[in-house]
Image (cartoon, rainbow, N blue to C red; front, side, top):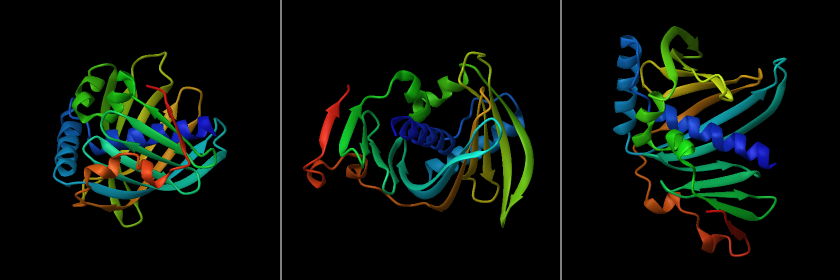
Length: 220
C-alpha cells in the first residue's frame, strides 16, 4: 500500500509539473507551446480536475488502475483517490492520509521533490538534466493534442523520459506518460478540467478536526 501511494503522489507531482509547464527548453517550437501553456495555468486562478492512472510492467501488462481528483492553485494541491488515500500540500508540508490505516504521515518534501512540486524551482529542474523536443500531434476523442518529450540525461535516474500531451485549444495537460528505465510505465489521463476555482488556503491544509481519531505521524 505504501509503494502504491508513493506512485500516486509521484504522479501528482508530475501533474503539478505539467500544469506549471516548463519554459527552459532547447527547441523553439517547444518553448512557444510550453510558454503558452504556462501562461494559461497562471491565469487559471485555481483548477480542479479528474484523472485516471494506469500502470504497466515491462511486458505492457496492466498492473493497476485508479481514478481520483485533484484541486490545484500554484504549487499547492489537494489530491483524493476514493477509498484509498487523500493528500494535502500547502506549498511546504505534505499530509498523506492512508484511509485503511487511519493514519496521516506529515512530511516536508525534499529539495528533489520540490523541484517537481514548486513552480519556482521548475526552471532549475530543467537546467539539471532534461532534454526536450516537440513531438507530433495526435487526436484523442474530440481533443487535438500536441506532445512534448522530456528526456532524462542522467543515466542513473529511475525515470528515463516523460511525455506530456497538451490540449492545443485549451492549453492544459491532457495526458502524461512516465517511462521508467526498468521498462515499467504509467499513463495519466486528465479530464473534467475546470478553471477559475479560487480555492481557499484551507483547501490545502489537513483538516484535523474532521479526523479526530486519526493519528498524525510527524516525519519532518
